[in-house]
Image (spheres, rainbow, N blue to C red):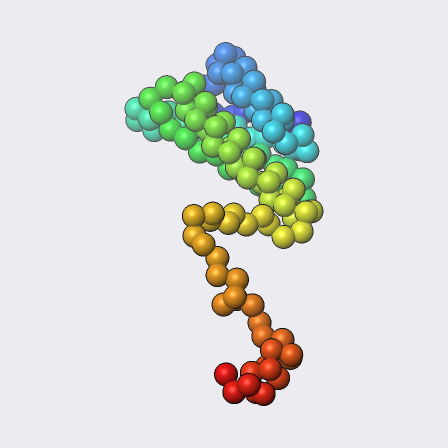
Length: 132
């Protein structure tokens, strides 16, 4: 995976680059078909901001933005947001290949099957004969 680390309004040190690179490489374990990751570090007054843009297969682009008082903490938060998006993306792909999405059934609500059952031709004829 290709990783590009840039800084906006801040000089990016080698330790910050290594930390961001380690966080970006960690995302590969969630989704191994990632092609590139662009990490942008920015300083706005006292806020440290990190934006991670991950390109995955078929042109899908996932973005994780975070801000914190510390650049390392902002990098952690951006990585967590991106990891959640990757999990969701991977689940969508897996469910797509299974067919319909799984639906959860609420077991606490009783289901009245007789109300939902459609009347057959024989049921209609019997009702007409008996006058029900």
